[in-house]
Length: 475
Ligand code: ADP
Ligand code: MG
Image (tube, rainbow, N blue to C red; front, side, top):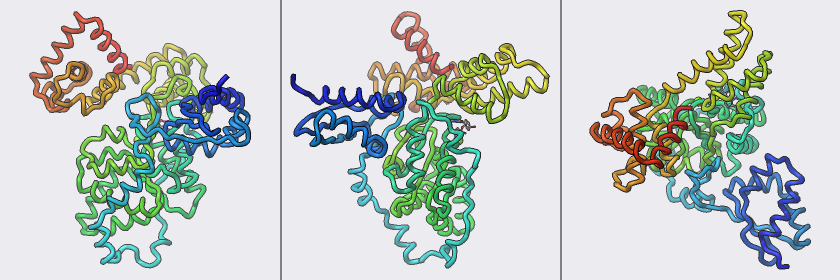
């Protein structure tokens, strides 16, 4: 029988599976594809450079043992890093710019103007001794890794965070961009990384700041005529965490200054950690050069947690608060609040409060009332952006395509569905919906709503689209 890459790898997998946790196996080994066996070297394809580094760091021995068992002492393992753009796939994270391109991008784009000026000025802010000035990190110690529970939805972002905090500035995850919807733990994870770094490297200057505050500081500095001080302050930082960078959308002055700060930090091996409510591809009104920087490192997504993770987050919260709660109540809450961890916590806190104020037993009835209140609130929060994202994801296109001028039928339908749901689920006017979905007028939106009504009455497949999307948008 001839041995193939596939058969060798299958045997390796059997061995590996026996030796590690099922979850780790699923995360790190199932995505691997065996591609070639030549000269006693097995080539395996991994989804990203991050994957490769993770395997090397944690599983290299296991890989070696298993492969030697199959191919003998001269066995070799070759990694092939898949370089496709994997956005839109169900993959929990993506790395878009392979590191081999990174240096190329970097050397091209070294930005001249500001740096030159700085050199001349030699910097009014770095007065001798400034390095001894303590910069308050603004980190919240209550947001740490210990209480950031792991689940499928956050595993890769969390692991990447741990890798960064073990070696700030020393991994290829620079910047590390954590993205995901509201209340899924971006701020928590960003703090956790900072807190962990501060713990491991007390001498490093870590700073957490929201993009909003950063913008405010910048505007103030311009008013007070000390923009350079502002820049130099930020250039002193070893680990810069900027939360909610989508806030920089449309603010070109702040983007410009951030661009220069980012370059300086990056070139000096300093770590940058960013969070955003959107993937870089979906960020609007952020300059291209900045977006391309965001993609240098790793973009890791926080997805909505599955049921088990929601239950363990709740249990952990209750445990920390010293509260006991019947299992069926916990399950009920976790089952019904799906898309937002902040609301999940809110519901359980409200439940605890209600029961202790009113001296009522926490029973399913009470849980129902509380959950209903929260679920209603969630509904009100659906935004047109969110609708466009969900609809485009559903049809596996990006938001730009959905908004484009094309007349291709499936794209037109997706756009009409987005308009229909925007009308149905938000209070926005037809005109405002039109302007947000590809700059159309109110008549187009009205027409879209009618078309969707008609089609869902006559076309089975289309009806299914509407039902699926309704489910996705109104959980
Ligand atoms: P975001 O910044 O994405 O809107 P936050 O970081 O503010 O979300 O998280 C919302 C709430 O959910 C916080 O109280 C946070 O502690 C909690 N939370 C999020 N993810 C987790 C997790 N994996 N484990 C425990 N708590 C979490
Ligand atoms: Mg946040």
